[in-house]
Image 1 (spheres, rainbow, N blue to C red):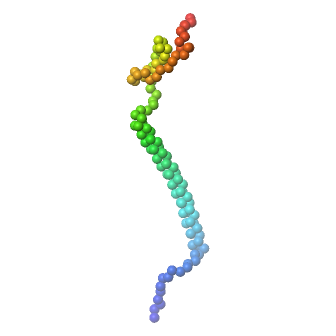
Image 2 (image 1 turned 30 degrees about the vertical axis):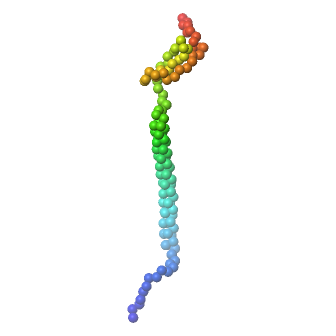
Image 3 (image 1 turned 120 degrees about the horizontal axis):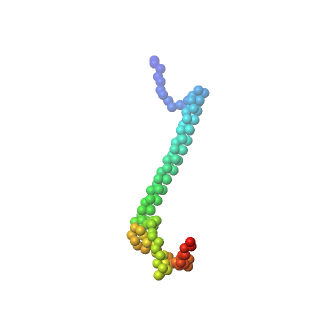
Length: 115
């Protein structure tokens, strides 16, 4: 009669050489895992920065649209009006008066040229 064989699920103890190979593989995988975690953190930070920037830009555009204007530096000519004792700031792009301010007593003093 021939011998009969069967594969069964049983305990297997590793040899010392097998344990060394497993330890080397484990060290490699731990290093790989740590690097992946670092890469994930860097990518998350990069995407967070991109998302924050996009949110800020969208918010800025919404504010401009809702307000219908934004504040800008516009070149203005400073024009004295001695009759009204004011300085007028006239926009060079539209010729509108951007603002007015009262002249100080120093502004009203006549300048004398000394030769």
